[in-house]
Length: 361
Ligand code: NAD
Ligand code: TYD
Image (cartoon, rainbow, N blue to C red; front, side):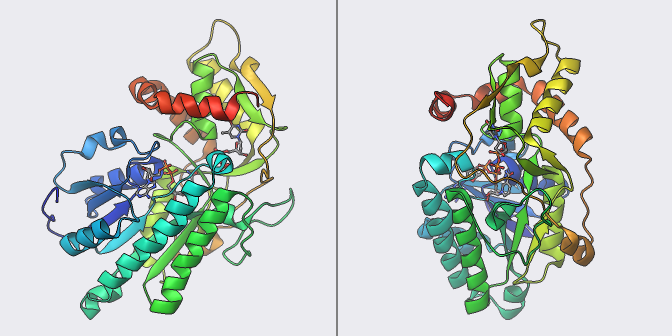
């Protein structure tokens, strides 16, 4: 075991070296809310640089490993006895799931199911008071609800699941297992379904950092199909604030939708990034928008996602604090001010993915 359990509250965070998990960990430690045991497999998107600020903090314990490794999870639970588990760990990219769904089943379904099983066995041995206040919070996505037409009402917690990609199918399955562990065994679980996150430290396979990176390197900016697909954009810090409130005030067995109230067409987002770059990092060769190329559409591409977050607003008192226009400008600044981070994530593995997904598209 790497370090002793610190005094006070401790959360087991999985996937805490990824984009959203690292934001949660940094925020949790900065606010002295709880110590963190961070279990991450360090797949291609897990990045210890995201945690550089807390790697020497005695209140942050990092363990490399898989949520599906029952022996390891048993040992961690026994030794660290967390007050809550927040499960971010997952394979997270739709395009990769289209190329090969199997790792998504392994991590998001089979891995999660083993993890729930280990948690349940440990939780059943807790004294009644501790068992009652323990929470297992599972981070999911709005993609489980499928695709909306242009004027359809936004997804609510009651919208039937209709996943269209192997990624969203695996997340839907994971949500069902979490629900079943509550209904069948009484494990105090919570689920959050959020929209597209943006902000610092996002792996550049996702739209916003990919556009930035390609623009800065003078490469084509690939837009799938016509670019009129709509996503709702949620700042990662707003997402983490909502997760915290759900942990503190959410009702076990319930799910909560989290959205940014910022629906945008993809083309609008890309043009906004190009315009921001034109201002802050003008390219002598011309406007960045000259690099935009319409490429072959994503198969099964969901037309529109929109979130009705009325439940978390009314029941838990959360609201997104970030305005998308300002949040996007700050995000662009973060990437421009962190060239070492950007350079480091473009390893050989990243280049192989770009070649696989975009060559001949
Ligand atoms: P990410 O790909 O940046 O990070 C995932 C992290 O999980 C990585 O650090 C990786 O090493 C780790 N991981 C993967 N498989 C693991 C395993 N089997 N055991 C332990 N660790 C493992 O993803 P992200 O964007 O930070 O997403 C975090 C969670 O939020 C995921 O569950 C994702 O489905 C969900 N989500 C993301 C978004 C978004 O816009 N990024 C939107 C909705 C929901
Ligand atoms: P992405 O960031 O992969 O998130 P998700 O598929 O989970 O919504 O994609 C966001 C949107 O951007 C989605 O409609 C697909 C589109 N997109 C492109 O047009 N070009 C790209 O190169 C990528 C990665 C995404």
